[in-house]
Image (cartoon, rainbow, N blue to C red):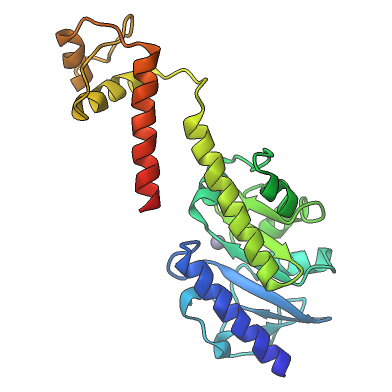
Length: 262
Ligand SMILES: [Zn+2]
């Protein structure tokens, strides 16, 4: 019993953490812990994970039957139970919608590039589990494909799921997953060898003008009719050098990063 209360409190603490981190909005996300051979604690549906109290946590068996508790378990319980069924070595599962990771999931891009030593060591690569209608068997089926060789997955067009030895472990894996997604996204922004489209060059010229930098126009670039950039082009007959573009991209990137850090 004391152990059970301890785990219920821990679930509430992690719920508060994921809510304050912005990993979930409103009533999103769900958390579970294995406490016995056929006993699991899991969060209820329709409750904000930032304001959980121990009495809201439900005890279920491996079939999802409620053993104890007044609330209704999360509708995503099946994917939690799938992880426990397939991985007897894992004792906690966490599902949230962290913005960067969810953006990759929405675009259908797995986090399978080894870009940082820390995340490679702690997290490994994060595959994409094929989209499944929430609460149906499609979701656990998609997760099953990856559950044995990974510590987490992106759920296509949905969010992220991690599992660990204990709840803190599953939480830190989620933090690493989201951090990896964020760095991955910024790296993609900074990638210098990609050709800018004509439209993007036109937008950059507009931004450059707004920033008060000297207005110049790109040589051989057809700026779309009717755009503000067209006017800039007609006023100036100079060329936009590689250095100019680099300077503008650098300024825009710095602005984006500053905005993100606020
Ligand atoms: Zn979800």
